[in-house]
Length: 458
Ligand code: UD1
Ligand code: CA
Image (cartoon, rainbow, N blue to C red; front, top):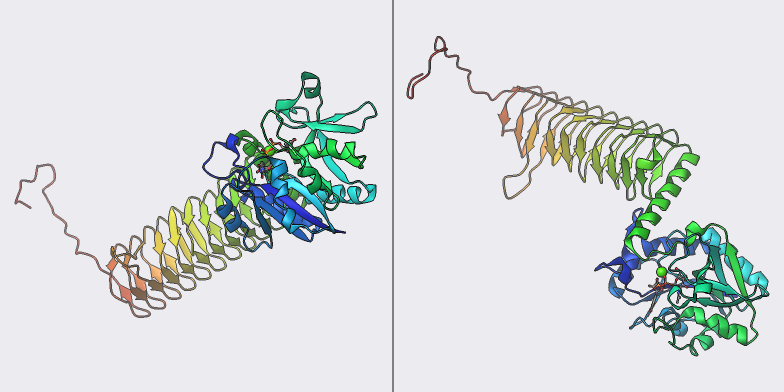
């Protein structure tokens, strides 16, 4: 039999107190629903159906290109009603794996084991449960004297006796064929929330002598549902912890994983050391033998081997092997550094290519520039790339030496091996091997110290 996954994601998530639908909130760099979709993919199901409702367009937009079918739940009348919306998309020969879009910690491996158990048990329906120390808010698994499942009750409907059960419903189920839709069509809304509860299909199955199983999972952390911002924070923290452990197991040194936040999509090579208070986000790839941090923030950047970065911010940049960056540099989108480049303190670079072995060691702004190899940019040099309307390019050819505190008014090209004198403001191209100096003649006024200079007097 084929397996199809149905992800319920139509709810607003009222408890999030947000303008955004719940499943679009991000944790560890990915939207909640994407965590769930990624995990489901690992199970190897043939088809994924997502039930959308609140923020339907945004959810669809996020998932375009993911090979997913959508069913619309116009009004959110409960989880049972939500699953019912998938009916037209499911044929008789499909088994269902049903889960919620708000359990981002769930592992693909756990679902695979559950599906395997279900297929071998010959059951008509199965629910995944776990023991929770703090079961508040979850539906409770209620078992009869024979320890078999009798029903699942929601917190709001539970009797004091039932609330004592610490075995909770994960919201993850398997169903054989179309049977669940027949049961769903017989649900009512006679409960505290006036909703069609998906969980109410279990007593119906039991009454019809269908085989119902509970699959108990050990790791309750994975089952954490996100209903509010505190749970969002807790789950985000758990995902970051998981990622850090994974990286350490793969040969990355972390001085303090508690203050290191690395998104799930980040890749880091062996023997790289990550210092405290470092945040690495988006699709960032870092090579081997690097030293990153302390206090570094990197977003969606490619970083080679043997790179050192200290106390800096790097966004959408590409940095080749053996570069040294910081402290206190700011590399903005479109920055490309070739091998062995040194970027020092208080340097901002935007949309510029810096050739192999070049150095910009102190206090500079380099924007819209092309630097050749072995260029040395003196302290305080600025590319004046913007005239208030347009941006222009600065080109510094190989082996150029820019004196300290130079203003390069773009468009401008400084030819190979040319030099500029400190303090110059240049607005004309400089040919190769030339020296360009623009500097007012210094005047030294003598013998006037110690008395006040009157106006008009020198
Ligand atoms: C649900 C279960 C509860 C379980 C818990 C696990 C029911 C009645 N309760 O409770 O037993 O312990 O999950 O986390 O099923 N949704 C829709 N349409 C709706 C309502 C909900 O698509 O009309 C979606 C939501 O977007 C969400 C999921 O279903 O992704 C679960 O809904 P939620 O309201 O969070 O259910 P819980 O109260 O957490
Ligand atoms: Ca929930």
